[in-house]
Every structure is written in C-alpha cells, then in structure tokens.
Length: 280
Image (tube, rainbow, N blue to C red; front, side):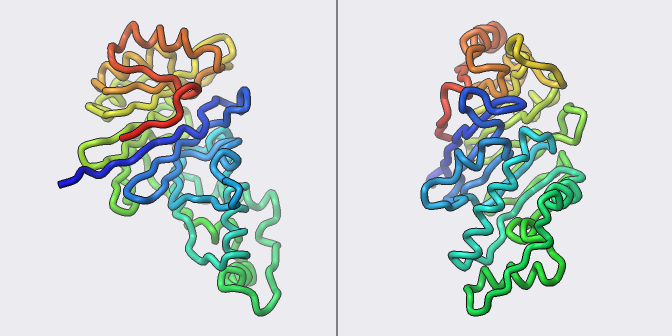
C-alpha cells in the first residue's frame, strides 16, 4: 500500500515584522491534493497569491491571534472575494481560529466597514449573488468567503482526510502547536511558545519539527519565545528527524542559531530563512 506523501513550504517565518523581504509566519502544507495554510502573518498573501490572483488554499489554521500571525487574513480574504465575484465561486474556505477568534475576526473586519458593502447588480454569477445576499442579510463578506470556526488548543481538527492534532503552549494568549499526520510521516509546528518539555513529548518521533527560536540574537525584542538552544533541547526530547529553526530574530542569526541548536540536538538542522521546501 502506498504511503500518503506531502510537502511543506515556508512562505515566511519572520518574527514581529517582515525582515529582508521575508514574510512573517505562514507555512503551506500540501496534503493529499489539498493545500492547508498554517498562520497568515504580514507578507503571506503576497507570497501565496500568484499572477492568476487565486488564493490557492483549501483551509487555514491560525495558531494564535498575534498580528504577525493573522494580519494577512484581510488581503487573503480579498483574493477569495474576487474569486466569488469574477469566477462564481460559492464555497467558503474553512478557517480555524483559537478561542476568541470569531470576535477578533469580526472586529478586525469591522475596522474596514466590510458589513456595509453592497453587491446589487443583477445578472451576475452565483458567487456575486451569494455575497450580495449575505450582505443584504447583515452578514460580513469576509466571514462569508471564510467559514470561520473556533477550536480549543488540545482538540483535534478534522481537515479532509487529515487530522490536525493541537497542543496548548505557553505564549500568554491561547496558542496551539500543531501536528499533521500523513500516514507514517508527519510534521509538528511549535507556533510561538516558551520552552515546554511536554511539547517535545507531543512531537515525539516527528519527521520534521518547526520550532520557534526567536531569541537568536540582539534583534529579538522580547516576549514568550525560545532560544536556538531551547529549540535544540526540545528536538532532542522529541527525537525528531529534522529540526527547522523558525521565527529567528534576524536572517543573519542563521549560522549561529544552527550551531547553538546543534550543541543540544544531533539530528539534521535547517533554518527557515534558508531552506523553504520540505518533502514529507
């Protein structure tokens, strides 16, 4: 029997703001013919959307509601809206948010008055008509092109034929690490967190471990994050096959971050700024 395979593309992993043209957090997992976006920080929409103006995603999971993980939900929503208006799309994209996410998304959208928009021309396609009808009922077009749902960190999320296991981590606001299972192969994304040995156990045996190593140098401003040494220690606890250092303070920290992590983890180590494509 063939084992399901997939890939992971690092669209961005800069912490706080895009650095050297590299977007904030966003990871595109291609699984069983579907594309799942993990986090959607500033710059991710530009990295994701090509010349065809298509969003090209089947689902989105947000780890937590900090700006460097969610701000590009607005331009991504605009791309989806355009697909409804011009191509007649009527199928919303599932969007999984941590606790408080629905209220956050509505408040965020209300800053731009999206509920006050109107699409009233007759004779347009089904997507145009569906958005017009939703707005006429007082709905928000952003929450129409997305099927937004909340999940509790620690719950499993069913996405197509894939299960996304989540794990609560320590980042002041509700935040979830994620594990995506692909038959015998999988990967774990730590999201933003302080060092938690239990997270290493959650990631036990993973093929690819994406770990927050934000405190990599003097440009990391602070907050509840890990150092590259912490990331190495966590990967060692997990006995991961490959470690990817993410959310670094600056691109120039890559070599020193890898060297520091290697003092604690003897497996393969990558830096998200440098290596952006992974096969699973």
